[in-house]
Amino acid sequence: MTAADKTSRPERKRGSGVKVVYDLLRDEILDLVLPPGSPIDEVQLAERFKMSRTPIREALVRLAGEGLIDTLPNRSTMVSNIDFMNMHTYFDALVLMYRITTRLAAEHHRPEDLRVIRAHQAEFAKAVEEQDALAMIATNAALHSAIAEAGRNPYFTGLFGRLLNEGRRLLRLYYQSYDDRLPQRFVDEHEDMIAVIAARDVEAADRLAKVHAEQIVDQIQKLFTRGGHLNVAL
Amino acid sequence: MTAADKTSRPERKRGSGVKVVYDLLRDEILDLVLPPGSPIDEVQLAERFKMSRTPIREALVRLAGEGLIDTLPNRSTMVSNIDFMNMHTYFDALVLMYRITTRLAAEHHRPEDLRVIRAHQAEFAKAVEEQDALAMIATNAALHSAIAEAGRNPYFTGLFGRLLNEGRRLLRLYYQSYDDRLPQRFVDEHEDMIAVIAARDVEAADRLAKVHAEQIVDQIQKLFTRGGHLNVAL
DNA sequence: TGGATTTTATTTGTCGACAAGAAATCGACA
DNA sequence: TGTCGATTTCTTGTCGACAAATAAAATCCA
Image: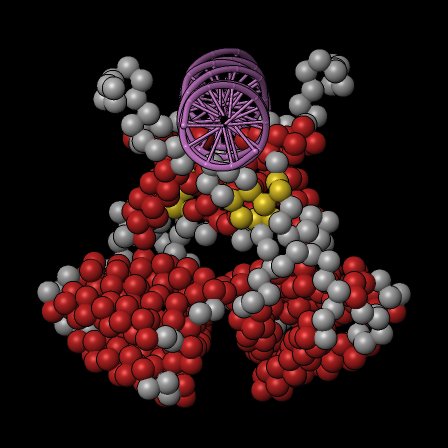
């Protein structure tokens, strides 16, 4: 059989198109390859991925459902802006979810969860050591996602995942304009958190998570009040 | 001009199709008109709403994004089941969101918020008085949504809204199998909550919300352990 | 008759094309 | 020359049809 026949090439499994577009577009948005406000053109994406507009649109609908893109009716659709005005609402939610997920992880984790968590922590430590900002962001989010998963509450993990994603965009700004020296503290704090989770010390988990989260929030807030060089439009 | 020309009738504004389908399907799912497990047939919906499958599919994608329907790749799509096994995760999330949104409402509400909240409370009281179960469910959700809105944190209101929706399905079972006598207590508790919100007493708001939420959770849990007559497949 | 395999049927995923809406462009007139 | 209006253009929303994938039905062989 001539599978590589040029005349009739699907070249791609049936249901996979949307996922490819969705994943890639999501990463490009979160890594600020597509900065907030960037226009999203369906036909451009269609020819870029060599597929019809239909699967593209489905991916865009899902992205819009997660608030990563805004779509004006009958008019353009663009990458959603980072809302610097109501940033505190984001921080409030983030701190609370840090606390509750860590707390639940201490309560409900199973042995295999700890292995996964420790693996992510090792990757994070490596990223810090190598001063790889992008890897730091990604592995940090993965670590806390893993902790949240161990808490086994899909409602919290869902919201927390979205917050961490939104945070990826913020941290991207953060690490762009700062020296990458600070994060060693985060490695240590992660170690402490994992220890109390393993010990099933719920209250200590809550306390450490709170401190850890507020640590991060403080750093970011300090950056913004000092007037970091924001290279995105407000 | 012959706007009512039968041969070429759009008969419907351009971007409105999806919203109509989405809203109606959502309500039918939440009111258990479409019980969990019901198959969703695209072409059937297409001819029911007299439109192409494309806008139907977009509505379904959005519903799937909110977890209201499950879609098997390349195969059927159906109304998502109510997860009775992990119900406690739902209750945990619900209680916490009740607390945090009420707390934030006490902190951040503005005068006009109180008017809206009191209006919803009046409607809820009327529904209770008239023993209208469906109206009780709807107005209760609307009331607490309004309180959450007054807290002005879109992340929390988003999750809370989804939880209240999911709760509409549960409460539908609840009110189906119980006498509708209990809820007078809820009216009083609502009054107390609104009072402490208006007084900006954050701690009291938190406390009352916690009691109120656990009240509801207890009622529902009692129903299930007593073996309510569930008319849906497990 | 029972099990495996081929055939059919149904439903979803994808495509190309067309039409409607809104901004941008062009033109007429004061 | 400035402003208002018509036209053009460009993007999105919708449509009907086709193709792939899977389940069900039918057929064949032992």
